[in-house]
Image (cartoon, rainbow, N blue to C red):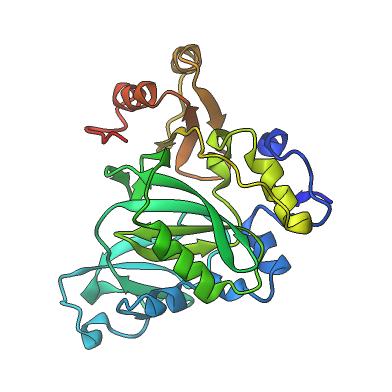
Length: 283
């Protein structure tokens, strides 16, 4: 059986194939996991985390939010990815947008953690940290393979509470240690840096539950080139000469390309050279 939802340009990563259908996209994950698909309800996720949130149409000011405070507006369920229609707005200007909700705006570090889960218990983590500098609330780059031991008990407890009976891969995105999104699949754009043992362990887990826990991931940097401009042939040649992989992104209207670099120092310098950042953090 194949992995379901793999982009054509990423097919070479997904080997060996599993014996049953395994979701790589959120649409496939929602279809294949009826017992656990409720995790895609982001309004319920926010309320469960103790955040002030409500469907658009409920005035944030009636929920104790100051009129000039910024809140985040996004679809209650979004299986399309890349924060479609998500944006920050002033509380007294939240639109009555059907199918969307508002939530108090979180501050702090944005993280993305992939977890291998066996029967509702997290058994392995791969952590990635977003850059402080952002484009429309989206990190300019993701630092793959960071160590976040303080988050692991929090993630493990969330999995135990919400994914009873689930075996496979899941992803939890947090800001300031509080969940903002959950996916019943992994951060597919980061798999290049997970090492040679990850895919076979994932496949063994979903096929018969007998996976060998992978070692800590090697890591790297994933950089988004946001904006309508494309990289020139000269820029592409210079980037490739640094050993950085370039993946054009025809799927996201305002992202020209995704760059993947194993040497994080090279990737950070490249961000500055391309004018993507004015500052950067280190691992």
